[in-house]
Length: 185
Length: 185
DNA sequence: TGTACATCAGTGAACGCGCGTTCACTGATGTAC
DNA sequence: TGTACATCAGTGAACGCGCGTTCACTGATGTAC
Image 1 (cartoon, rainbow over the protein chains, first blue to last red):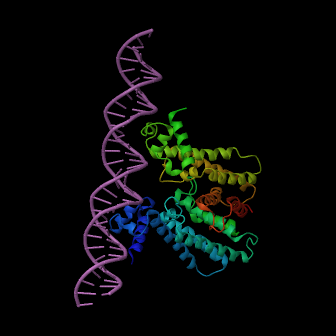
Image 2: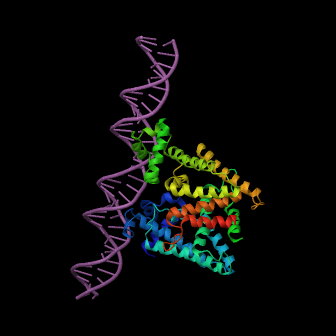
Image 3: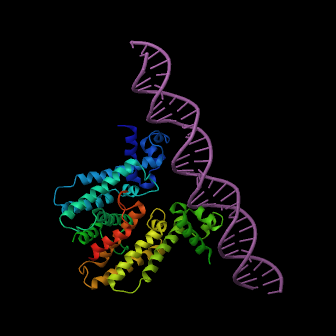
C-alpha cells in the first residue's frame, strides 16, 4: 500500500475518532508515525490531503448507492434516503468535513467528480420514480435537490444537537418518515 | 451604549464582512478599536462573546417571525419558511456561526432561550395549520422538525455552493417551492 | 556483476504566524463620609 | 466642598501553544551502462 493511501487512511481514522479539529497536518503525521513534514511529500498542502479524505466520504456514499437492494423505484429511493441519513449519523465527523469549504479544496478534481456522481446517482433514482408518474412535470434534478436538501438538513440538525428544543427531540428516523411521507405521499 | 453591546455589534459586523474565520477575540478587539485583552473584561472567553453574537442571529429570526404579515395559517407558515431561507441567504456567516458548536457555547443560557423560542414559534405556526386539518394526527413538533430541517438543508446546501452539481444549480427559491409543494400539497 | 547516478520518501530543525489567555498596572469615574 | 477609597474598563507586555510550511539533508531503492 502506498504511503499516500496510508496517509488518507490514517487521516480518516483520526477524523472518525477525534473529530474535524484533529485532522491537522501535524496530527495526521503523528498518527501515521512519520515526521510532521512527511505528508507534504504526497500532498501539496493540508487542503489537498483533507480533500482526499472527504473524497473517501463521497465514495462511500456512492458505494452505498450501488449496494442498494433491488426493488421498485419507490422502494429504492426510500432506501437511498435512509442510506444518506445513516451514513451521516454513523460518520458525523466525515459528514461535517465533506461540507466544510474552509477545510477542503472545492476545486479538487477528484472530489468534484465523485460528489457530482453522488448527486447524479440520486437524481437518476428520482427520474426513475418520475417515470411511474410521480411529479412528472418537475425537473428531476430540481426535485432531487429539494429532497436531498431535506435529508441533509435532517442529518445536520440532528448532529448539531437535536432537531427541536431540548424538551423534545424526535429521532431522525421519525422525522425522516414524516419527510418521506410529505414527498412521496 | 455599553461596551459589551458595542463589542457584540462590532463582532456581528466583522462576521458579516469577513466571515466566521475573522471573529477572533483579537480581531474583534482590533475592529472595536480597543486593546486585544479588553473584551475579556466583558466576556469570560471567546465562546461567550461568539454565543452572544449568535444569539443576535436567533433574535433576528424571532423578530422576523413577529413581523410576519397577517393571513391564513397556511400563508403565514409559507411566509415564515421563505423568511428563514431569506435570513440565511442574506446573513451567510451569521447563519454558519449559529450552527457551529465548536465556536459557540451550546449551554449559554440566553442562546438556548432564544433558539428554543424560535423553534417554539415555528412549531406553534405548524400547530395552527394543523387545526385546519393538515396532517392532524402528527405531533406538531415532529412535523415542525421535519419541515424546518428541509428549509435548513436548502439554505446550507445553497450556501455550501449550489444545490446540485455545477452543471445544474436551481435557485433556492425554486427548490423551496418544490419543498413547500411536497409538504403543503 | 559491478559501478555511478538519479529518484524520492522521510527527517528534524527552524521560521513566522495568530491565537486565547494572564497579569500587573493606569486612569477615570463613582461613592461614602 | 473636600478627601479617601472602591470600582472597573482598558492597556500592553508576555506566555505558551499549535499551526502550515520551508529547507538542507539522509538513506534506501531503482536504473543505466
